[in-house]
Image (cartoon, rainbow, N blue to C red):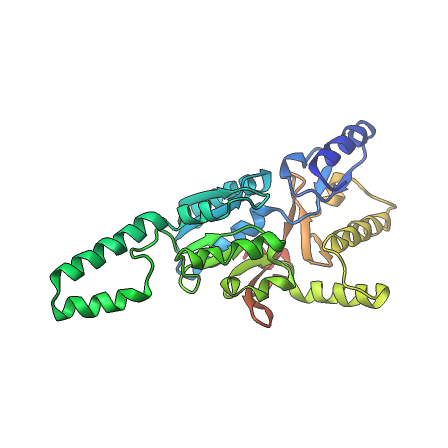
Length: 309
């Protein structure tokens, strides 16, 4: 099952029969008690990229998220991540997941009105002074639409597809300088179109092990003549996991003990293992958006021992 409602419905049947379920929902609330989520969860992606950012000196974070369950999950994950990594969450704004009135939340995030008024007030004061220094400062301010510092070093922007491409350029438009303020994404950024939006260049997101993912894409294209949809690797790994557990030396073993093997498994997106809560823990890479594609800033671990250390 794919969506959280489908997972819950299937689990009602399989639990009564003592059967485990490998599901693809990203809603960790439906995991556990025989349900194992193989998906990439927002909590791990957000924690990974915020941890990477903090290690590189960023301390203050904002979240600009869709006003839906996914956005709320990202916000909850960001709150936990900043506490865990010794940073702070200084600003939160939500926008309509349908893409309506995107300007308004971005302007609030940018504190645009107050910063615009601050610039106009400063210009008036400099004109009133009228000396040479004031004139030079006034000339320099002609290139600015606002003035004043923002209260964050990075913005988490957990969107994807066409809505991300529409939303991202509004940040620099309202004077959030994306060459100074780092944009952070989730797995929804793992799309070739992302590199075509200038505002997203230099942004970071947590994603699959690139070596493993590229190998899977190549094998899929060779077999089917096209690139795989995003869920293809999850479906492949679910079937591969079932096959591995079916070939245990003592016979097929689909017990919780076997499924939650702490050594984990190697999948099409890198290593993964299931915790007692039924949620897949993954070894993820940190990627940076560049014009030519995604550059690996931190390689994904190849063992869980390396992830722990």
